[in-house]
Image 1 (cartoon, helix red, strand yellow):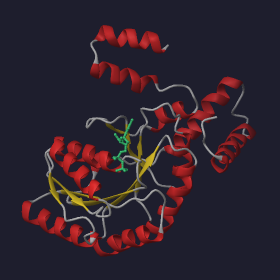
Image 2: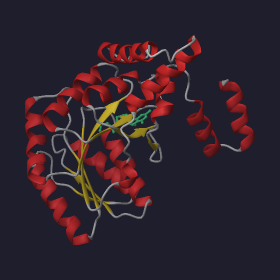
Image 3: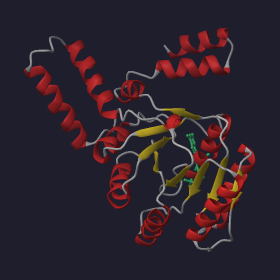
Length: 278
Ligand code: GDP
């Protein structure tokens, strides 16, 4: 029901069976608890983006529409708020709109950007971005790359070339939580060819339980490092396996919602919201 996918669901069942065989599970409630523990454990990559080494080159990849550009804008703002100097590289030269969109996010977050014309060589953009970063003492270089509606060989070849030429410290794959199981094959494909270093899960503010995220982590063995919780610049958060496990299992992510409420409303509003949610 959480759209977790067969392979991953079977793995959970097997682990649960092992626990049961050890005589550790006595009633239905303990089963629920155990499933949650197993899911949280499987989701836990033990890493987050806060501890990124500087200077760093971060290559952001993903198919179109998943929220790649938005996420780059949010990351730029996040690192800037941490006092780091950020520069963006508009290496998605496939569509002029992508370059314009990244410029808007650079303005919004108040960071530098290097861009060339539509159709320019993406490697030349990255090269110039790295050089500019050296000259301007930028600590974090975030590179936007071309997506397509689906993975195609030309796009993959371009990404492989950037990977070999520039050896990015992070290769982050952006995945849309609303997409479901299709995200799993996309992630497996990217990971098989590019050996990604982590995943950013967007649109977690939507209704989807995001069970596909568990399959993505299980199938790639790569950690979720950040999650997108909305369209606003501040809607980027650390990933909490425990909360995500509750959400996938339909237990509701009350903790996150209440935290959000406390940030955005006064206490009375938050109480009212919590009452409604319950
Ligand atoms: P790209 O094609 O991958 O670069 O995707 P965009 O960054 O242009 O985003 C596609 C759409 O998804 C836009 O309408 C964004 O506002 C929206 N979007 C991105 N991230 C989130 C998120 O975390 N939550 C929600 N609700 N919408 C998002």
